[in-house]
Each structure stands twice: as structure tokens, then as C-alpha cells.
Image (cartoon, rainbow over the protein chains, first blue to last red):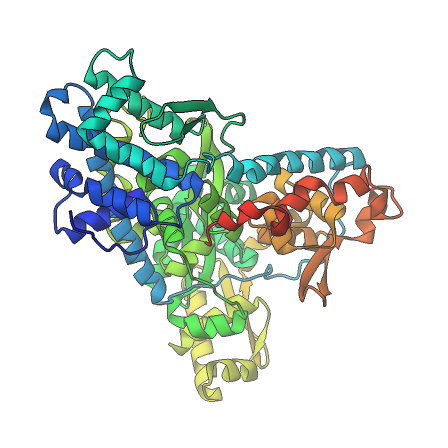
Length: 237
Length: 188
Length: 188
């Protein structure tokens, strides 16, 4: 496995696209499986991913895992085909808009700015015109409602996965899952799951919950039990 | 006559006026106002004027033509900070092509949570939020302040607008059953 | 090209510009400016526009056509005396409880751009702007007229003024040091 140098990336799709383009591949299931390991390595080395963005990276990691496992172990490929093609389509669409944003950057760079006028054209006389029926009590209520609207904004950075589990620990979980032994260990966790497909679907469901920030996944060390905790506060916005 | 009225109002205001506001002031129907305003936009583009009428989402603004940018900027004494980070640019691009767009759609396309970036763009006045009754959710679209960076009369003059505005694959992704009534965004 | 420049300048000014001023701004000769401006006057007359260019002794002005005079008056009235929207009332309230407040603080608190709302509150004489030397920026507060309208002698007589002026929630939002996680906010 060779290491690929990636430029700074903004999100999971940006990173994936860079990896695939570096390998000069078209976006496909095979290409996605091909860059899975590189994706995880890049993620591990990155030290600028905030805790709240991590969930988004992990969701993509889980999909890559599914795609790779479908290719490595075709007998698993009973369900989850939809999720696999989802990522492929999502990445293709992301690429379209990424290219469009580069075109827009070029247009802005031409500095063909237009200007409006700051004031009305006619001399509108400044005339004291207070709002009708506004009392000091209303203003207090308005101010309190403004404060209430701010609450979720302040809470926003807190409504994320706790940093107790480092990025590298989580990456290890996912990387291990790609290997056979991880699938075995995952069986231990999901003892009640009847088929291997069940296991993967359960794992994806788990990650979806992580993404929705309703639970926190904690694991002390690799292969120890995964603890699932419910977050107290729902996502802010 | 309606065209003249709209032209006069946009000149007087200098700021963007919404279709709703134009309807109130001219006492005309929405479809008539939109038709007349769009005709004006085309008219200003076709004659080599020093002015342009810009359309952003559901409002219009009279602005100086990009050809006289440096003179207009010097006179307006307006500092233009068009520096945009990559995430801002991506978000604005999707809002420009797809707007009005929900936060869920934005996040589906970008693959990341967009709460903070949207808040920053709202504060900078490059994106505005509106409540969509049909979708029962907030939708986002680009503002005149953003379109003024582009120097275009309308966002649909952006390259590949039709392809990216009504992207077949995108619609399939957002709506796998290809059933426009269903609003079921698939879980990512 | 000179015609476009003059047209743009007359729009931006919204008031008469002397030939001398136009010469300075466009860096053109007096005879050329007059020739171009006169051509514009004719052009505006010939197309049935809602606008006119008026020539006085030695100045030019862009004005609305006499045919739409009543509409122009309706617009002027609308700017100062239409009902204040909820976003406007919120901004006014923040200026009252939190004033003197900068535009940036107002926008952080409300989460949206406040340029147009502030412009309107200033025209209505509800809010006034002052330059704060320490902050080296413009700050906004409610006017004496508005405080009197509320039946108060001073703004700090508003209910719960002390508690709300420096409310903990505001401090957390506006003071990044008190909230280390804010460092994660991406630059726009």
C-alpha cells in the first residue's frame, strides 16, 4: 500500500475525489474500493478535522467499507446495494458542483462587480415614525425571544461527538472492520445478528445515528466493547 | 406602463425590491409584475446601458453595469471583499444553481454539516433564508450581494445552469423513487 | 463608453451632478461630456422609459418620469411609514437593550445581515449612528425620540434592562474567549 499525498481537503467527498483523481480513475465502485485504505490513512494523518466533521467522514468511511466488503466478499452482497451506489452517485454530483464552483471563482476573479445605491434617490425626509402599538413589555418579550434563538447557536459546537475517542481510534475500528478479523470481532458485538448482512446493516445504522448526533460511540481500546451513549441535547440546527 | 413603474421604483430604491413589494406598490398581479420586470431585465441587457437590472431569486435591483466597474466602485466608495473560502464558494455555488435549496439538500451534496457555514453566509448577506410552506422547512438562496460579484443579470446565465439546476442524477439521488410527491431524502 | 459612465454616475448619485463634477469623475473633456450627456437625454426621451434625464443650466439629474409621480410619492411614504417587520422590531429591540452596538455585533446576535434593516431604522429616526473612537467603528443606539415614545426618560428604564443588557447568553456568543469552542468556527 503506497501513501498518497493529498492536499488539504474540506470534507469527505473532497478527499475521496482527490484520491480517485490522483489514481486517474473514473468514479466507480471499483475505484472507491481501491482508494478505501488511502482514505482512512489520510483521515488518520489529518489533525484539523473538528469533532463535528468527524461524523461526516465516518459515514463515508462506513460506505467505503461496505463497498469494499461487497467486492472482497461477494457472498455478503445480498443487501446494501443501494447504499453502495448512493456514494458513487453522490460523489459524481459533488464533482459537478465542485467544478461549477471553480467556474464561479473564475467569474468573480474577473471583478465584474456591480453597484447599487446606498440611499433612496429622492430626498426622503427623515421623519420620526415609531412602530404602532409597541410597548416596553413587547420589547422585553422580543429580546427574550432573540436570546432563545441564540441558545442553539452557542450549543452548536457542543452538540458533537465527544472528543474522548480520538480520530485514530475510530479509524482503527473501521480499518479493522475491513479485515476479516474485524468482521469476526464485529460478530461478537452484534451477537444477536443472524447474518453477516445484518451485521453490516447494523453498523451502518449505528453510524447514521452517530451522524445525527443522537448517540456517542466509545471504545476504550481496539476490540473491546463498543459503548453506546445517548447524547443529552439534540442537534442544534 | 407597468414596466415604467417598476423601472422608476427600482431607480428610487437603489436597493433590491421583492416581487411582493413591487406588487403592493404598483397594485398589479404577481404574474404581470414578474413578466414586466423580466422584460426590463432583458431590455437593459440588450441596449448598451451603463446600468443593469439584476434578478436574484424573487427580487430585482438596479445596479451599475460591470463595464463601468472601476468608476462606479470609486464613486460608491464601496469596499468589496469578494474573498471566499472553498467551503463558502461550494455552498454558494449550490445555492446559486439549486436555490431555493434546503439544508438537507446542501448537506447531501457537500457531504458535510452546513450549519455554521450557512450562518456565516447569512451574516455576510450572501445567502438569505426563507420559509417554504410546501416543504415545511427553511430554504436558502443567494442574494443580490452575491449576484453583484458575478456581474450577471440573472443566475441562470451561469455556465451549465440548466444541467446543474435540474440535474437528472441529482434528482434521482434526492428522490430515488422518481416520485415528485414524496419528500423522502434517503439516509446518507 | 462615456455615455455609460455618465449614466451610471447619475444613477449612483440620485441627485444633480454638475458638468464639472462629471468631467472630473470620468476624466473627459467638457465638450465630450456635454455631447454624451445630451445624447443620453435624447435617448431616455425616445424610449418610453420610467426615467428621465433632466438638464439644468450646467448639471444633469436622473429622475422618475412625471407619468409615475404618484407612485414615487407612494414609495417615499412606504419607506418611512409602513409597518415594521418582525426582523426590524428585533433589531430595534437589540439596539435598545444592547446599544451602543456595532453592526457586526447586531449581526452575530441575529444571525443575519442587517444592512437594509439598519438603513430603514435610520430613515425612520428610530436608531442613530455614532462613531466610536475606541472601537474605531460605527455604533448604533435608539434615538431620544424613540425612548420618549416608549414613555421612558432613559433607555435603562426598560424592563429587566441590567439583566438583559449583559445577559450570559449574549456574552457567550460575543466573547470568543469565554467560549473556546468558537475557535472551530470556519472562516467564510
